Length: 325
Ligand code: TXA
Ligand code: MG
Image 1 (cartoon, rainbow, N blue to C red):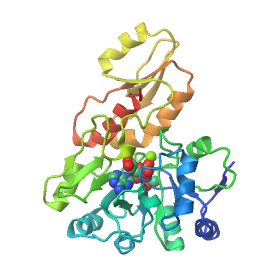
Image 2 (image 1 turned 120 degrees about the vertical axis):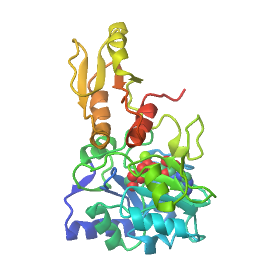
Image 3 (image 1 turned 90 degrees about the vertical axis):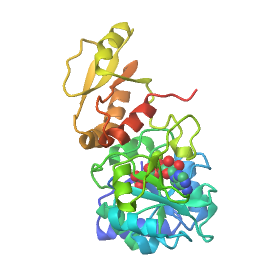
């Protein structure tokens, strides 16, 4: 089992020393837990890919304390980056910029750009501050699995990793991964929607911000279609179509309903919140519960609302309901 530590000055120092020695440390953030390693250490970064079972061309996010630390990683800290960092850091926004020559290729999956974010969670910040340099961290789940929003999820995915240090930080406030915005091109483009929406970015940049649509092969490998999938087959259905789908099903359906709903045996309902932020905070734990409920099919009730505040959640739901061929 990994070693799970309550964050104190002493355990943060121990975790920072482990990073210094080329080890990996799981730490909490306000979005999801991250599996961190020293951005400047190619061997440590390769270990992170290996631990996750992550394809080597799927780039990592470098976590920094602030804009000053971000400048160490890019040769293009431009006005747009500065404006977004001033408005949204620390917080759930990742900025993609051209990477500087000193960043090892392992930190960016070989990309010429680097993704950078300054997290808000106090334990993440204390760790970066103590370590003193950027920490590259993907979400702390096995590749292709649902991101972890609490330590129990991390433990479930990495049960056999005795060398791993896990810093405890409670349940993640936001529950879905950061917004990734690409500033390396002419137009600002959202590669992965999150709590910071296109209109929030557009307001600060004073220019339109597009959301990249996912049609099969996406530009950012981590945003490929089936990525947030539970192991059990999942379908995304409108509320009105659920009863019929259950009546056709030979077996047990596990249904994520929006608001309370009573289902006939042997089916089971997991009640989800009606508010998009609360829904997001609950989503990954609910998908893991649904997976463990011994069903034959997971049905996710499609949120009826199309407003921007549901966009990040809808993106994850659509991808949970798709399986790679
Ligand atoms: O909220 C988060 O962002 C969490 C916490 C731990 O900070 N991290 C996270 O990391 O979700 P990960 O590795 O699971 O997702 C990183 C996403 C992937 O979709 C990846 O393809 C994209 O960011 N990404 C990273 N570097 C990129 C780059 N240079 N260009 C385009 N996309 C990039
Ligand atoms: Mg991930």
